[in-house]
Amino acid sequence: MRRGQTSTRRRGTVSDLGVLIGALALFGSCSPGADRAAQVPEGYAASYGNLIEDGTNEGRLVIWSTTDQKVMRDLLSAFERAYPGIRVEYHDLSARDVRDRFMALGKTGRASPDLLLSSSMDMQIKLVNDGYAQSYDSPEKGNLPDWANWKNQAWGVTAEPVVMVYNKGLLPAGSVPRNHMDFVRLLELRDARLRGRIATYDPASSSVGYLCLSQDNAISGHVWQMAHGLGANRARFFSTSEEVIKDVSSGRSVIGYNVLGSYALDEAARNPELGVIFPADYTLVMSRIAMIPITSGHPNAARLFLDFMLSAKGQRLLTRHAMPSVRSDVERPMRLRDTNAPMRAVRVGPELLIAQDRLTRNRFMKQWNREIEAGTASNKQITPTQ
Image (cartoon, rainbow, N blue to C red; front, side):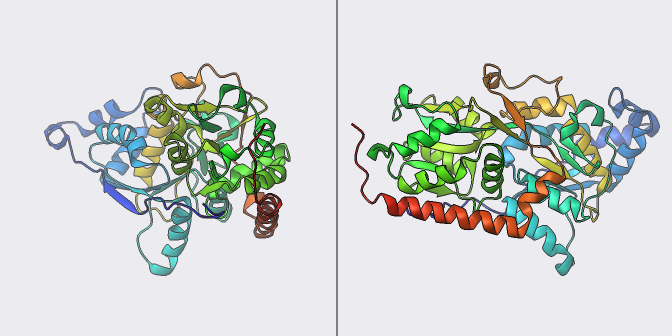
């Protein structure tokens, strides 16, 4: 596949997950105040019952998210059981669609989503910095690390490692890279068995891929050497982690670089031939960021959902799908407990704005493309290693 060729992710799928249940219980209650008190989560102030009442009266919650619906289904179903008067609409979109469609709403006059949840950390922070998020002092704030919250407007809800994947049947154990420079050295071998069979994000089409590379470059500076090697090996470029993982899992590619660990571990549980590598020099930890837009039509329902998602119960539901909890009191998914790789969290905050600076991004992409093209030109014929 030529450099820059991508697969297209399913976009714009809308699933109305709202199911009104428990109506008879609500009508049959002789003491609404007592019912609200019974719903207040343990440890929350009694006044939280007012938020529950307000959110239930709004009756609707619209979420735009980059996270696959199947991954969120358990959490959404549990939220609806906890607050049966709130109908949830969940829209599964790409990161760019979340941002671009949201920004276009002001021009169209259409209703705003109530909560944005995106794995593109820098795009979310840019929206917050530009004044599109409202503040909310969640009662779960004290249970989160300080890197996971910015101005009570941007909330990190997961702590997901960025990993490499490989096909165990195609890559000998002795060739498996253990860190980022091992991967670069593997590229420099220019082994014909890897030609056209290395997969990674296309940073031009993937905001998450671009962010991961910009973080790599800031930490270790190996990105340009790696880009040259990717070009020399005719790497395949995709828009999503799922596509990279599928390419490796199917055997079309041998190894994949920089994918979200939640998707990789889920696939590895289904396919024992898929190996997952936590780089031993450093493993980036990304977070899906939630924000409540100032234009939300159902802000109280959104606050209830944010609190539920950040609660220990909500976080445990996310770990079922290999999305590690941002909380220290919730165990990591089983498949993460054996790794000793040093985790390096990407802070939810203004530092991420650097990656969104237009000049910075343009310079990065120009150099990336130059290195890819130079690598491609440097080795038209790759010979097998001896």
